Each structure stands twice: as structure tokens, then as C-alpha cells.
Image (tube, rainbow, N blue to C red; front, side):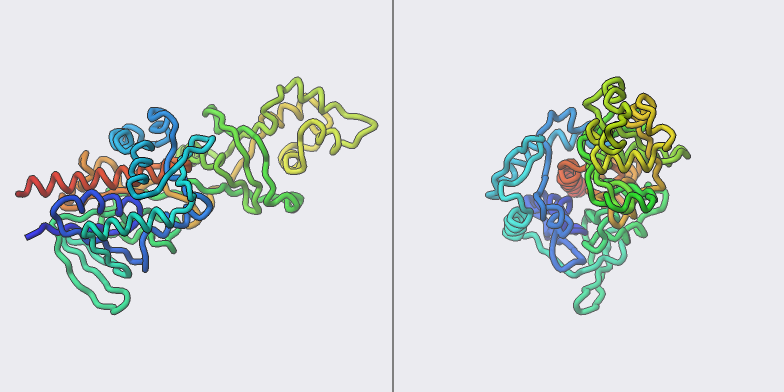
Length: 400
């Protein structure tokens, strides 16, 4: 009789686990509470599916907060592997100028369709609109959301690929946390999310406008350059996301969450101070504009720098190059692209097997790791999905 394996969650990690397991002589069942697979994956690909990044592997791995833990898997299933895997599905890819890897068609849907078709051809059984309510050893209590009927299903091994907490309407609602002990999970926090600050009404005209080509950093951390969007609630952009880990550390250490910006990184303080000299022939706004402070940047300076310094060129230049912005927190976790926190490394074996329940393996965003956007999230989901599936194979082989 074939051994039965359940995968809970039809996102990238769960589907990759299914792909590995379908190559063994197992009966593979994928349970997904939504009507279709990989809804967050599809959402991420609406504006262009950034599936990985082609930078050097050592640099790539350094983007993760749990680099040592993820390194063996990310090295094995890196961007080159992913491109070859896509090609095998009939999906060609390319590397953008920033090093990001995209399918040529840009969208996620063609890749997902090809992937699901292959999994079905390999015998993977999908159970959509099926919600797993209870996990007891290797038994699952499953609710058919159409018929409302409950059934207890027994398996030889189970892979949890349930996601974290962000975008719960797409399926990752965190309900699985009740199946584990509280001390097995690091509390989830928003990651790759905007930061909140209450602006004065003066800032309203620049809501939605970008701060172009600025440098950002936290305390003595490395500076990163890019654009930031001024939002009604604070600031938002990939540049903010890159500083998320350091911002969370501030909160963890009891500090105020705050960020430094260099609004004009291509100028020195001395050069900028020279341009900011007051002029009887020009308005202050015009002097600032000519110095490089466009409407969005000038508004931020007016918001954050004391008016007494506006006509002091050197003091103002120092502020523009070292602008401190305090925040009240991150946007709600529901809005975050991803989450930090999850199942702790120490409660899992090296094969992602739960020490408290050896028949259960875990992968994807539900694990306690974090990364910025840029293809790192998907790469780690793919890699840990494959690693957990290989763990299942080793476990079941040892039972024979």
C-alpha cells in the first residue's frame, strides 16, 4: 500500500514540496482552503513576477536574517536552478538590469498553470475548499467548505506549508498556530511594510509623491539608496522594506523607531550649504528648489526641521543630509508583503521536522526567517518546500 502524505497549503512552498514528493511512490494530497492554488503568488505577479535574484550567491544569502540556517537550501536551489526549473515548465525567463529574475511574460499565471498541470499529471491530488481544522499526531480533521462535512484523514507524514499572517484574505490566516505550543513560535511581525507617522495637514499636497534618489539608514547600519513614497500614513517603498529588520530591532530594544535620510546624497554638506545661501532676489522656496529640494523633499524639510534653521545654510544642509524621522510603528500585519517570526529553528530538526511531532514537517513563510523583497521571499519558499519534502522522503524511507 502506498504511503500517504498530506500537504497543507497550495502556495509556492507547498507546491514545491508536492513536486518533490510526487516523484516518489507516495499518495500525495494537497489541502487548500481557498477555491484555487497560490493566490498570494498570483497577486505578487500581477505587476511582474520577481521570482529570484541573480546576484552572487554569498551576497544573496546575506539578505536573510537567518542566513546560516537557510544557506544550504538556497545554495542548492538558487536563482540559476529556478530559471532552469521554469524553463523545464516551458517558461523562459530573463534577468533585469537590477539583477532581478522575471519570466519573460512577467505574469505569474502562465507559470502556475504549467506547474499545476505537471503536478496533476504526476498524480498529486488537490482538495480545494478544504480547511484543516485539527492536527493530532498524523491525523487531520478536514472540513469540506462546500458540503460542510467533517472527515478525519490519516497520513504517514504531513507537510505544513500554511504561510504566515499577511494577506489573510488570500489564505494565510495563521490558524495553524493552535496546532503548536506557544513556545515553538516566534511572534509574527509585519515585514516589508510601510512605516507610520502622523503628518501635519501641511503635508497633504505631497501624499503619493516620491522622494527620489535618497539614502536611508538606521543608526550605524549600512546606507541604501532608492526612492520612497510619502503616504498619508507615513512612508512606503522597497527602500523602507530594506530597513525593516533594523527598525524592528529598535523596537525590540525599547528604542523609538526612527530612520535617517540623506535627501541629496550626490552633494556634500559644503556644496549644499553653498547652494542654500539666502538671496534677496529669490524666495526661500526657489533657493531650495535650485539646490535640489523638489516639492516633496522641501515639504519634508519644512515638516521636520525647525523654522529657525531654514535661513542657516550650514545647519540646514546638515539636516538635509542627516534628516531624522521618528515613526510610531509599522502598518498592520494584514497589509504587509510578508512576516518576520514563525516556527523557531530550534524546535525543528535539520530536515525541518517538528521535534514535538516527528511526522510533521514545516516550510515556507511559516518558518522564522525574513528577507526583503526582490525575489528572496519566493526563493526561500521554494527551497524550504523542497527541503521539507526531502525530509519526508528520508523519514518514510527509515520507517520501511
